Every structure is written in structure tokens, then in C-alpha cells.
Length: 220
Image (tube, rainbow, N blue to C red; front, top):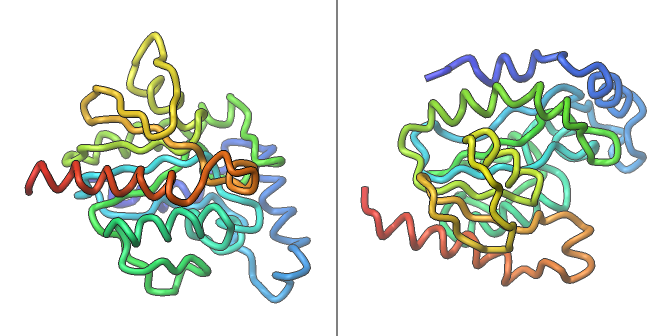
């Protein structure tokens, strides 16, 4: 088990563009968060390597994870994710504001295709490739993994390519793919999807409710 994995993630400076951007955002801040001391570094993964469920997102938000230092924490996507995880029993609370708020995951591990906040929320392919060794290391360490939930098409494709799956299957919301571990695709809970109604709360909740039922059916 790579006990120092998150330490190495936080110390990473492989991508000059991302280093410059995350640190600039941390200095300049957003007006509503001007009293915060921004994290301004790569955001570590969250959870236990004994987990049976893995969630893969895209990258931290500039004023979310890049501010709070915890993945999916402090932005609107995190509000949707932790609310859904709590309903499905994968989190002890739906709180998502700060990394010291007492949140604990249950049987769940959260990572991202890229661990640094990118300009425009769009990491370059080369930046995702630089981060990919961390994902590979996590997949090797998650020995009990039964389900992988990919949030968004990019995370979906990154995971499949990491696993050597070709050709890539078609992406579809709450679609299951017969792999080991089982893969489930979901629209990302970004504002682009939630504000337009492309992704609704019942649609998103169903992904985690169905996943919880599947994992429970497998037993311990």
C-alpha cells in the first residue's frame, strides 16, 4: 500500500502551466473567499485503500479543491457529489465546505484524472498523462475494488485507457460496463450539466443508489 502517495501528489510540480495557474489563483483569490488561505497545491485523493468503490473526477476547481485542499470540497460539484454519497451510505454527512468538517467516506475512494486545478477547468492531454502514474498506483493498491464510477466523459476515457481497454465503448449516463471491476459512467455534476437540467438530482442519486445496492449484493 503506497502510504506516501498523497504526500507525493501534493508535492508534484510536473506541469508548469498548472503550477503557475494554481498558485496565481491562490494569491489573487476570489472576493467571497478573500479571508481564506488557499491550498494552492495539487489536491490529494480521499478515502481508504480498502474501499470497494472508486470515484474518478476530472480535476479540482480553482476556488473549490484548490482553495480547501480536499477533493470536490467547496464547489457546486462537491455539493452534488457528497449529498449523493451521503444518501447512498458512502459518506457520514453531506457537508462539503472545508477539509476539517468531519466528513468520512465509507467503502469509497475519490480521485481525479488531474490533481491540479486547470485554467478553464480543462487540463491538457499532456497534463492528464503526467498525472496518470498516480491513478495507476491507486488502481494497483485498491485490492478490494468492485465498482468504478467515472464522472464525465474525460474521466471515463482516462480510466479505460489506463486499463488498456480498446476500442472505447460509448459513454452513457448511469450505464454499466461489464468489466472487472464493473465500470459505471455518470454525467459530471458540473454547473454546465446541473444548471441546464442535463443532469438532475434524481439522475445523479440513482448512480450511487444503484452502486450501493450492487456492492451490498456482493456481501463482505
